[in-house]
Each structure stands twice: as structure tokens, then as C-alpha cells.
Image (tube, rainbow, N blue to C red; front, top):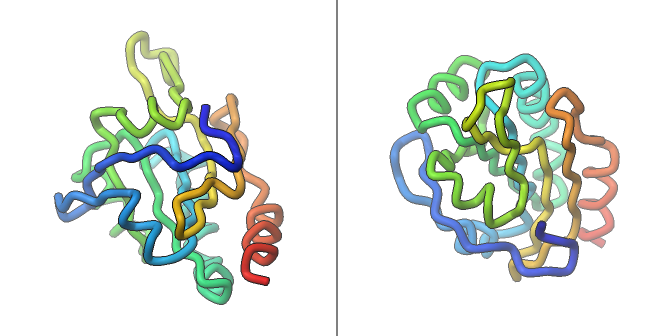
Length: 158
């Protein structure tokens, strides 16, 4: 599993418009909150991403951007993004390369043998590609500590 102080793994994912996004290039544009979530249209994931949506101005005030990542296909992610008015990229890791590279595989998700999703996880990555904050849950029903994320971002902005 990727730890604080380590370089973020390289990964190429696809956005909701089927365009490739290299994570290493995305973080060079500024601090990134990388939020992995198990599945679009599930209750806790919807609540989490809508919380990030509602906190966008706070994130932007400390020069942070959010990138959300799931193993869902770009088509499901696009429908999810549109339905909930999410103003940030949702990236598809349908090949599960980023999930494996970050060490956050959630195997047999929802009791489906052989189905691997992403654990609910948040990494804050600095523009130089270094992980500055990490939170990972083995329980997909647990949301991240949003106050801790904002505190970490505020500390980085000083």
C-alpha cells in the first residue's frame, strides 16, 4: 500500500468523455485530493462525492482539486456525475491498475466473488507527486473524515 511520503504510483485512467488522464500529469497542476470510491450510484459513495461537491469552494480556497476514481466504466461514471452535478473529474479504473498500484483492492465486493472494487480511500498528493495524506477504510460503509482532509490541505497551503 502506498504510504505518506512516497511517490504516487503512475496510472492512466479515463474520464467521463473517454479521454485518457495521466495521474502524474494531473497532480503537476496543483494539490490533488484523490478520492477512490467503490461504486457509482451506491448510497455511501453518493453521499461522499456530494459532500466533496458541496465543499469545492473550500478545496479551491487552498488550491486543491479533486479527482474521484472508481472501477466503474466511464459511461456509468458520466451518468453518476451528471445526475449529481459533480463539478470535478470522475475517472474510470476499469482495468484496476491504479487500485492495485495504490494497494487498495476491495476483493469480492458486495459478496460478488471475483469482483474487485476500490476500497474507499483518500490520498492528498502534492504537485511534486508525493503522497502527503492517506486514509483507507476496509469497510466500504465508512466515509472519510472530511475535517481531517481539510486540516491536511490547510496545513499544506501554509
